[in-house]
Length: 329
Length: 296
Image 1: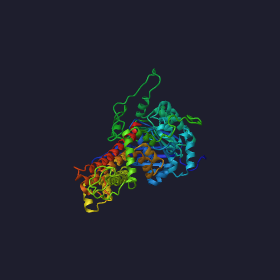
Image 2: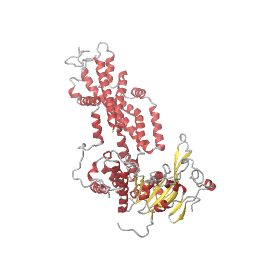
Image 3: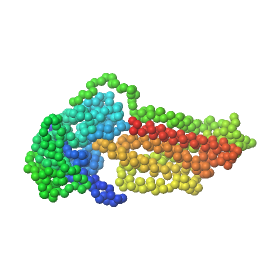
Image 4: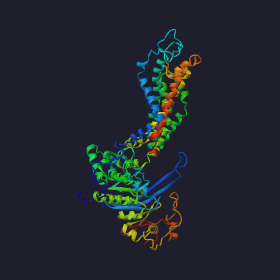
């Protein structure tokens, strides 16, 4: 494909102060009294064709962030500028059309495929609903796609239950990639797979990215996987980004104390290696009632008085290195 | 790129030489449920007979045979005659058309209405859901049988009215069933996936959600047919059923006055009702087992 050089912003996606609260239903007809603050003011951008990793422990809002960007969850606040348009301002039909530039790959390869549809219909659905009604043309493209993700043409008429987890994940990838979107949210695409299959799927994702100039928002909790595939990595804690920088930077010089603790928890293959593990005390606080000031201050080894009061600002301490910590230099 | 599958000319398909679809698997499992299979055969036969009843009935169901009242079973009248000398077999054959139709139409009506309402409520949720479910609760508070009595007393005592009333008073429970299915299925990843590629609501409902909740809908329909038949029979037994031609329930009603010396008039239609309802229950049971995804 020809390169578009002029007047194209380098950022495919810009997310500004994204907020997603889930109401906890109170009494009948009553207004909800409490909210789960799953995503609470997250800002980042993704460049064309790059992979942005998003890590954090369970329940920190990674998945919600991914789904809210695609408006599979309705955002509570913030801006999602995709390719120059604010996705939040689109009406449902406009959004539906815009979806040809967006895709998602799910974590669970079992619940993400409709058991009553053939593989061919599942993969071709995007093309069909986006207007490619010609059966022969669609079938041809699905066949080509099957081959591209490492499946065979005769799998076209099979049903999902006839496939293994890894193969199912390939089907899920094919479903999103076939209509050539610009951005794909990969929601822990390898967490449910065998380690031996994980690398195959990761390589497949990399190949497809190279060939089709895809940008990925790669959500995962496995730090090694994220390091392997991402250009830049963001770290989330309790609904907020705490640090975001290039892959190399993050692993070489983590700045936020949470990132440091997270990285020191990576197991090493060498049993003789001496490790200086930072153990965090306590549990993650509830996202219904997050701590005041810096949300990490309850568990932070270096917290000072200021951290309990003031919320740290999301700032760029070096080129391409964002962090939200009062003490970061 | 991973080439897990090089060019294969003749794919090894293993045991599944034929395509293994959901319905072929269901049929495979259903066949192993012996009682359900037997009763399916019985029921199919009943429907076949009902369909051709006018051609195989030996007598006119309304023809009076003077001097032949309360005849016991004989070669000319296999099921005997009633108090006007009418052939019971012919009357039962003609009555089967009504009894079998009542169940089918009333349950079909209830399930269609219920599925529509339940799907809308479950898929869209929110205020729409609240409104539909409150309407359901109001209708569920109306006792079917007493509404039937009222309608039959006030309006024409017609088959159509009976079927309509049974259908309109029983759809809310079907709606609840379907709504529950929709509530859980709409959160499935494959539904999100369909949305993410740009599918419209109508497609998501028809292609992704409805086919996946057909199993409980089918089972419930089957069980409801038996229930609707019993309601009609009950109404007929107290003398408010259709009599021209009479349904099985009406035949029982006609026979109960002479139960002591001509019991065949009551127990023949009674047994027929019993076995038909039993058949539907066993078929529902077999279908439930066959459609249960947990066995898979």
